Length: 512
Ligand SMILES: *[C@@H]1O[C@H](CO)[C@@H](O)[C@H](O)[C@H]1NC(C)=O
Ligand SMILES: *[C@@H]1O[C@H](CO)[C@@H](O)[C@H](O)[C@H]1NC(C)=O
Ligand SMILES: *[C@@H]1O[C@H](CO)[C@@H](O)[C@H](O)[C@H]1NC(C)=O
Ligand SMILES: *[C@@H]1O[C@H](CO)[C@@H](O)[C@H](O)[C@H]1NC(C)=O
Ligand SMILES: *[C@@H]1O[C@H](CO)[C@@H](O)[C@H](O)[C@H]1NC(C)=O
Ligand SMILES: *[C@@H]1O[C@H](CO)[C@@H](O)[C@H](O)[C@H]1NC(C)=O
Ligand SMILES: *[C@@H]1O[C@H](CO)[C@@H](O)[C@H](O)[C@H]1NC(C)=O
Image (cartoon, rainbow, N blue to C red):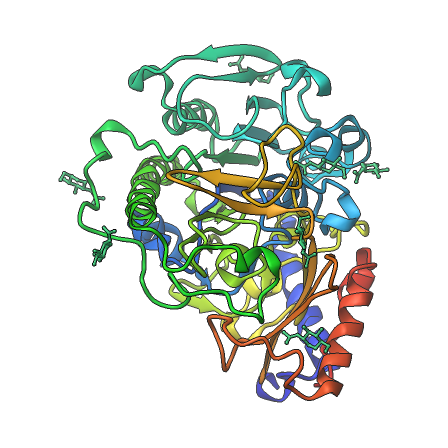
């Protein structure tokens, strides 16, 4: 049946249903524990998984390594808001990293937080623990300060603001705790690690099920490694293949074409330095996961514990000559690692099923033994996890990536812009975002289909379309050169998904 099912919408749903039904009996026992590790800005396409060998051995090799994991937006706060709410950006309304863009805003606290996935786990009797970065503006005075503890969490260690390694404040169960710059006491990844261990040491195989989320600053800016890892990976440089140091030609929208090609030598040196430091920061995450995993094992809980490892968005280092950032519509920014292991998951698998950050919440809720809340746009990955042959199970083919271009009014602006962009400066300044880098993209991955169709909201209504099978590095915009009927179908599907919510976001495969 499986072979016949590929690409057949109806039988594809039936297959999911059968797997779902066959899974139910296993959950009538005590719900499983879940450990969710979320890194910050960790790429998939630049090979950062090679830095985390322990995690790959303990989680990836013991379960499934996904190679088609995407985020709903290549920016921290919108993507994280999607993870918690299970919704696309146009439905959770956290458009950017600012309070007035709904990042951790009162509107978010009132509308989305009360039905985010932690609340469902709590209601199911889980003991819930959070440690690390939540949403970029969390804990700021204008959104309630560190006293605000999001509902659903029993034990809360939330970073105030955006990722840092030293000199930051935490909210510990609603009380501010300030940290300085002493490695032993303050290095944030290690603090998250130690607090996680405190929680874990209180859990037991015959106690309540637990959910713990460890949300590290690694490998986000300012890329500060622990001292013992400051010299690892010396001699490595950012990957040179694909679009590295290549010019974004007339097939690319305005912002991409601003990049200087070839990159100045000091930019090349800086980018390589950032590459190494990103990997170095991840070594502390590797240590954390190793101890957590071994402790779960030592406490005889490994047979009832899922481990999920992922990131909030990807990253680029020199692609199309853009120095370093995310926020772009290309694969390097919208793909992230995902590895999952746990009871019922056959080890040693690699899955190419297209999955997303909005699927994490539905997956956690279903693993806890409940059905997926109807307001969530994502699809549970449980049918993929429970299959003996996860590569054959596909839960969707069509999905959406949305970004609202950022522009800071108190920013001097990109070289040519006046208060209309965001920039990155080293020896010179370059635009990294602008109001007209606002876009929505349809991504289609299925048997014989591998497309991206992006609509920019700029002065030209620019469109970028790629056939990723033929052109994996997205050099060749085919909007005007390919079959216009294909373009029309992709455009219509993008229009529909951009307005979808809940079940309507689970659209059937396209006939293309
Ligand atoms: C913020 O969220 C509220 C409530 O969902 C919504 O009405 C408002 O339009 C959002 N603001 C932005 C800038 O998206
Ligand atoms: C935070 O609150 C939880 C639940 O009440 C409690 O178990 C834990 O000890 C508290 N943590 C700290 C550091 O106070
Ligand atoms: C980091 O560098 C140290 C010192 O050279 C070495 O012992 C260690 O194995 C390295 N760790 C990794 C993960 O490469
Ligand atoms: C495609 O054609 C339209 C209409 O002629 C034009 O405005 C646009 O720039 C073209 N796009 C590309 C990538 O060539
Ligand atoms: C930049 O680096 C290239 C390659 O290493 C070298 O050939 C070139 O001379 C350098 N340019 C400057 C201005 O230093
Ligand atoms: C975020 O979105 C809001 C609402 O559209 C806007 O007012 C604000 O300027 C945006 N922030 C940035 C940094 O672009
Ligand atoms: C993008 O915005 C910049 C700054 O406003 C402007 O100079 C440029 O023409 C815009 N390009 C497009 C295609 O909208």
